[in-house]
Image (tube, rainbow, N blue to C red; front, top):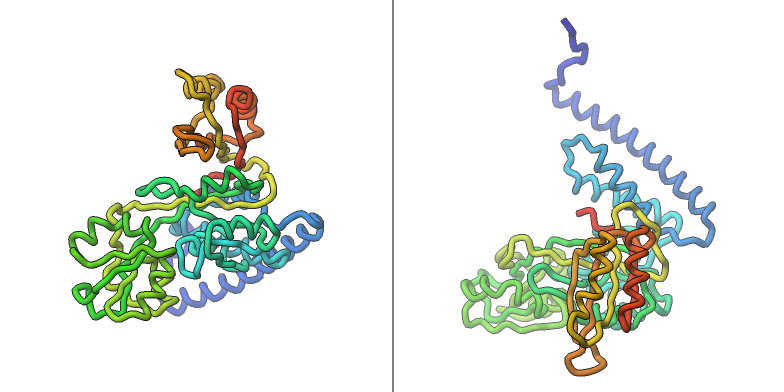
Length: 363
């Protein structure tokens, strides 16, 4: 008969705290050892940028595969994103542009993807965000591309048609909308500020709890929080971070109509990304105005076994009833099947622009 020689877990609180202290000391030593390796890698790479999205994805995927719990994968990702952020900053402090002001969901997406050891720079418009990276004011940008409730973010798609920036990553952010105010309670709210998309995501809740109260669309949820902080009776629909920044209480949490409301963001930069093993490729193309033209464009994808995860049309700026098609493919541009399909597509589409191949979001 086999015997387990492992001693039973202690029931003494002091023993557990002493064990945690010892583990913390070991973790600290290992973190600094990791940081020294990161510094050495930075010196070997020379002028190559510190941010390697495919490498970071591979590290996180490997940790998920080895994670035996009790920490869930999402918690492991959060911890190691911050570790990688701190180590990356020893090599280079990245400047990341986003649609501001501080406290927007774009701001939260920057922190989720890059960690807090970056210089996150707010800009007032999407055009300014794109220009910041294009001109070298910022190394990367994080921009929203679609919401699971309200669909595509049109200005992002329009700018992707003309920019020379590439997609090098994606972030999926669970969007929890909250009613924030300094009013005494929900009944005391006399007007509600928020971004137009956020108002649309909460229309049922507003109709039920604040019928007849004016809803005022502004440039961002953070701007809504700023306005609400300065006006008696005003409220904002925004994230918790905006409430903390502008000193607003949460009168009602989770006022979004869809419980799984999620916004997808693209990370933009000026470099191509190598395959990570779990990638997507995004492109935009036009279609000849004749019967069967869309089928003809999609047929090479089916023949080469390339799956689409997104297919969306948007009016082109070139003429009435002309459309562009934004497509997300499963796989990297260097994967043989994807590469073959893209060659055929380039010969069929009057206009085709590859927007980037990048690691798919892990969570």
